[in-house]
Length: 256
Ligand code: ATP
Ligand code: MG
Image (cartoon, rainbow, N blue to C red; front, top):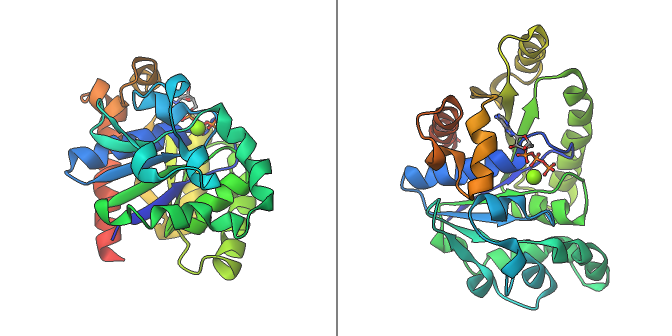
């Protein structure tokens, strides 16, 4: 059965999509069968995987509203060797349109049941909000991977996210847990990065992944070519860090 993980943090621009796309491609390199679900109307994960969000016949939007199946909406990322359930702006309407549906927070979970067996990992790239879309991700998942930048305000938002995860765990999805916190865009030359990083280790202990993703321009350049960073420039520090993270994740899960 697939391990289903949300990549979530309600703060914007913290590296969720970069983590989702590179982890998907990194796990594929480790011969894992991966489905990446783009749950963000921005469609950044879709584009980063080399799929044109402007020309989708079917997307996660149809799947959530019961107008289509994952089996037909998914595509293959030719550049990353994993499957993608793509998204675009249309998804922004789903939030409102789902209000009338029964069990609206469980739509993604129900849809995933049809393809789950085909994958080792399902990664869900969440939008920067604790919205109905993110809630669908959290209800479908076994765990959450939280990417965060080591800066002062990062810790502030973290408690809201952890509280939301606790509520979902208690009321909607007893399987849900925090798999780990991933330090991203790390700049070792900054004193503050070091300080926040050690604070995180102190508060969250084992929940902090050992792998640290450095700030690396190759990771930022890759999406404009529609190629995951780990494929675009495998020798770059950023790519190597994401590959190491993929290995750490596989090991961590085996130990769970
Ligand atoms: P949003 O909340 O809008 O969905 P996000 O959390 O998904 O954003 P990303 O889109 O992954 O964040 O990253 C934000 C920006 O930072 C992007 O331009 C991305 O290319 C860049 N970026 C992400 N990680 C790194 C890194 N390790 N090194 C350099 N640039 C990075
Ligand atoms: Mg994003």
